[in-house]
Image (cartoon, rainbow, N blue to C red; front, side):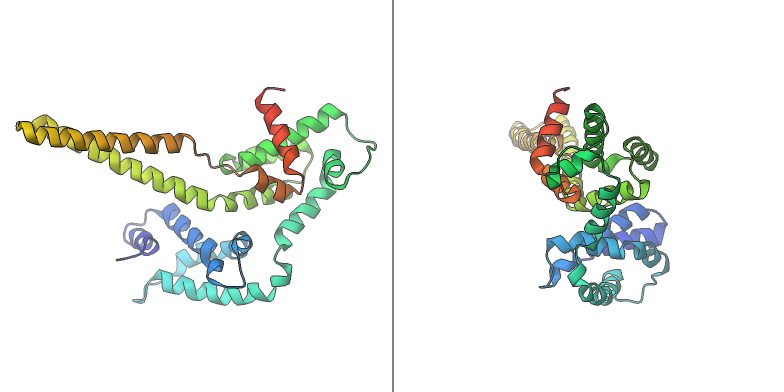
Length: 268
């Protein structure tokens, strides 16, 4: 049976459609690849993915089927790339450290106050610092859905270099790849159940045998029950990073993020 990656490639190669699906499949494969190496952990996934990401469009554009499949070809490319990555293992946190150091250069005073315990110095008014904090944290939480022009406006508003904010947003989005996959699988399961429910309902409407009708009704009841369960799961799933992940990326205490977003939710 062809893998989901190979199926996505076959669809794209034969129809010219489904580029986004193929790109997502390859991205997920690349993101998980470091987990096959004993020297790597989940903490390496995001950095490894970022270091390889720019090559993915080139692979899609230039790959030619030679009988072994795109997954074999991709795995070979990743193995060679992993050698380079492991040589720089001592700098495995360079992406987040770089982003954080640049962020510190342009960060408002509240970051220094919370991360280093520094005394208050000449800084913008408290209300400005609070609004800046809220807008930045909201941007991190909504990273999955933000458009480029919105990110540019936010960076300008809070006084941060656009490149730094874009970089932070990209790191957040990479951490959401697994959540996105689980969300997509639930959506697919819901769609299949929806189709089966309607097909079964049509079958029930045409059925004239009493005993067969009862069997169909029981099956229909179970399917609707499962459908409702998936609906509830989807209703409570958001493609948004955890407070802990935002804290790690920004380098500030999680408690500060918890309280800021709590009071923001309450309208304070």
